[in-house]
Image (tube, rainbow, N blue to C red):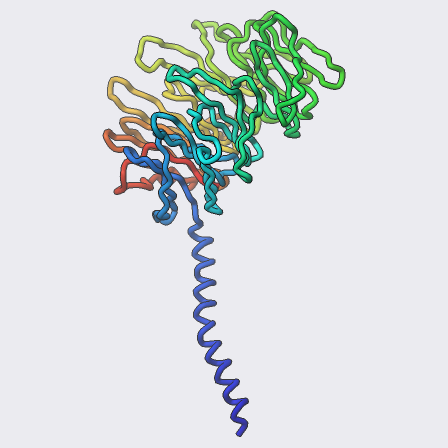
Length: 434
């Protein structure tokens, strides 16, 4: 009898007996993961100076508590992987940045102390954050615009004069930044150098947006909308003799502008120069509010103020194609601006009834066969706020606040409504983690 061979076989059998259950567990875990995928949210509890991670599908807390002092301030990067955490120390605001998936933390105060931070904002590369410093409680600013590099932790002065810089100010190729400086529009390169004024001297101008190729920008004066071409260093007037009430909104596909002039809402085709009136109401006075776009650029949304007598003014929200081929009443009396789903098929809104002290949460779903939006009131409570669309998977999250407690609720794409944080502390804010 070959004793070594027998021993080898026994060892192999033993190893197989040990490995097989582990393999079965791994397969089961993978299957369970597909059936119940992880969906993380950051939660900010009321009266708590921290945020925490929560798996909403499994109702499981991840034992991480990160300091954040400002109520509801949870600012995620565009890819949803990093979060700005604002804290207050000795009456001064600073912030830390946390990478949710690697756990890395960068504290601004470590490399840049003595700055009372204001206007912190992610850049579209999900790596840099712009911010300024405040010198007094009235909001005075100093020191211009700074940039924090999350990868290195370094801070550098980007621009000597204080300006608000958000992601729309950066050119599509991330080589230049457009700034509003002393009623003029100026362009600087990525280092904040080589400043160029592109608007006329002694006239009021503001930046609107970069155009898709990054070789031209849109800007506005008090009564015009214009385009500046870098190649020819020339200016072209697109719209003239119209008082522009608010900064126009460029459609996601870059083909249209939507804006309010006086009390009327318009769209403008940036290629054909077609100007379209969206508010041809003849039976009542019109006072149009801000305009927004659906993510697929098919619809432009605008509000019409109808009653200022109530504590929450009545606003009727309409949707229309930019060509105004049809006008559809979306919701009358919305409490806050309606929110589009990423597929542009749903719009979520809240309606406030002051007499009954009740807020209703509703969803309008586009029905292509009926060519109209189907309305559905989902639930109601004292206050409904922080309405968010769940990226990728679909469904709506919101905070339902029946005083004094608020809880994070979710309405799934399968039309199931449930309280994610029922039985936990009151929640003041949340953000989905991608």
